[in-house]
Image (cartoon, rainbow, N blue to C red; front, side):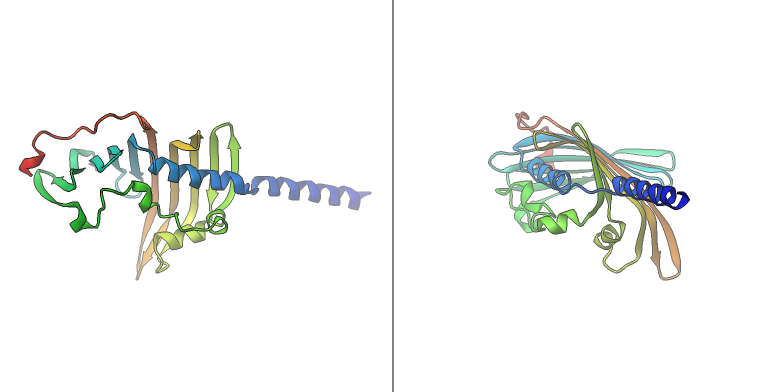
Length: 233
């Protein structure tokens, strides 16, 4: 009788562990499909932040508008906070009328977009890093997945993500999770959290960052807001 109870408890434990580590390939592919479709939208606004707990609790705030109906128009503003100091408009980058404009802490410059390898007649989705991945390769990036309504939660394959971050093998991840809100096959919001370390020769540094983005104004942004003095760059 005791052996039967032991076997039964072992079986239940195995089921519980399997449930915690389950992977729904359809849910995983839903994220990558929504990611590509989001990049393919005609216009939108992205508000995001990158928090780096391992670097003096640094925060990078991102504000971006894009419109890609005919030619690509893009306005990106980056604010930086580190060690209690904050620098708004640390870096601003714009694309308009086939040209790029850069303002780095007051130092401005401009260039022809094609000189930087940017084809303004193509949508951002052309740069989707997962475009040429097979379904099998995409699902292999995740160890587990779960879903509650429109919210998808994933545990990423730490070893594979480590390789993507650095193919030289210096990055070792302890935790890699992703949570995304998907509606109508479009990303509304996502949070990526990664914890680990990087070893270069004899030096070891912590890797701990969180990327959070909210995306709105899908296909409803009539114009991108640019500075009035772009032509003076």
